[in-house]
Structures are given as structure tokens and as C-alpha cells.
Length: 367
Picture (tube, rainbow, N blue to C red):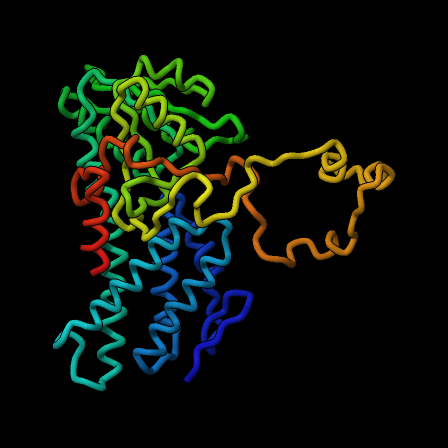
């Protein structure tokens, strides 16, 4: 039996649409990360699949993962989750004596589905463990600067605030002492910046929070004791790929001798080795040189643009969206690379790691 797919994201001979499932999971749970949503989608694809052999099952996983990667412009964190999940299932199938009698595919299939659910459960629990480890690095009376709207950083700060409230004999806004403060960098390009929910939640817990734009980071770092950010992907050399602006904050923190911590679950560890900002696995057009004529085309002033000698292809306008994903050109979706020498430590569910330990951790995860 062959496994097929089409451009809509349907997999196999049934009508299961993995891309729609993935987007639905993200929309239904704001706290769900892209890698976990992708892994849950793969598990649902396995449940919906009529595959009858291990080969077909693995092919289904590979095909479904590729459909998910093609459905978004920045698949870095998604790919980290799907690749690790595939490796996890392959490894579990290779363990002798754990998948039932040879040739009994029903038992093997049940084993795969059970392990898939177990993997999702453990991945979801990772955030709580990360928050526990990270909270220990927030000293009493300190000020933390953060950026990027990371869910795991938000969970860590909230847990640290709640624990601080319980230690002081109260909770939330009724606590007797303030354990720490937060400087939250909010992107000025967003109409509704990510991180506002965290800002409001921390203030409700009694944590003093100041919000600043990116332009005020250098000025404000003098009032911070540590910097804590999330990541879309942790690469092999211990660097990170994250929301654009993270790199420059890391440079400033290094110059001002402030510890720069990265908070990330291990399922975001990805087998990539970028050599610099322009060696990332996503196409970006952040530095976009333009002429006056090009601006007219972009702004829709086509009549004047044509009059000035700029050729316009109407056929392209008619087929907008027909081609593959366009390069990232907006700061809302852009990412940058922070090299390992700027990172003090990585806080994961497996403990606090140095950047040089990431390659060893990847070996454990993959081999």
C-alpha cells in the first residue's frame, strides 16, 4: 500500500489533513508551542493512517513532516520537534523484544501509538521542569530583562513570582515582599505585541514590570542583573535562532557584562550549524534595498510606476499565492542567530547547560 499526499496537506488514502490539524491545535491552545502541535498532528496522522507495515508508517511520518514544513515560512522550531519525534519512534522500533512477536504489525502499531502519546506527554511536562530550574537563577532583589514573548520564559517568571509570594507568607498582589523585578522589551512593530499577557499576569502577582521598546535596551540594561530569552531553535554549536533583535541584546549584555541565559526545552535542539546571520535555513529579505520606482509598485501606484518605465506583470498579480512561500520580509516573523560565545548558559528540563554541552546533548537525543 502506498502513502500519498496532495498540496492541501491530506495524507494517505483517507481525508486526514495534517496542516489543518496543526493549525487547529495552535488556534485552540495559545500555550501550545509549534513543535508540540506538530508532534500531536503526527500522532493523529498515525491514528488515522491505514498503513500496514513499518515502512509505510515511517514513510507516512516523513511525508507528513514535509507537508508541515512546507506550510509555514519559518519551520525551524517545527522541524526540531518533528525530526526528534521521528528519531524517537525509529529508536523505539529498533529495541529488540519491545514490539511484540516478529511480523505482528498490530502490536507494533500499538507500540508506536503508545510511545507517540508518551512523547507528547513528556514534551509538555518539559516546560514545568525548565521553569523550576530557571527560577533558581533569579536572585532575590534582582531585575530580569527579557524579550521575545517566549512561553517557557513566561512560565518560569510566573512560577518564580508564585514561589516568592508563598515564601513571604502571601501570594500574588497580596505578598509582603517583592522578590524580583522585570524589564520587558516589547517589539515596537507589533500592534499587539507578544508578551503583554505575561506583563499583566506578573503585575497581578505583585511583580513590578517595566515595558520598554527595543531602542531603549542599551539604556535600560544598566538597571538589569540578568537577561533571559527563549529560542526557536538551539543549534549544534550551542547558539540559538530566535526572534530578530535577540542577537543585538546578547551583544549589549556581553559588552555590559550581564549574564545572558537562554530558556528552552530540549525538543527545540535542532541539527543545524549556521555559520552566521545569513546562513539560516529560512529565506529573509530584511535588508531590502529599494528605488523610488520600486516603492511605487509596492504601494500600488502601478500607473505612475509604469509611466516611469517600470514593467509590471499583471499575470503575477492574478496568481498571487500560487507560488511557494515568499521570503520573510517583516520584522514580526524574522529571526536572527546568536552565537554561543554570547550565551552564559542554557536552561533546559535536563538542567543548566553550557553552550559547549549542546552537541553532547544532541548526541544523547539522537543516538
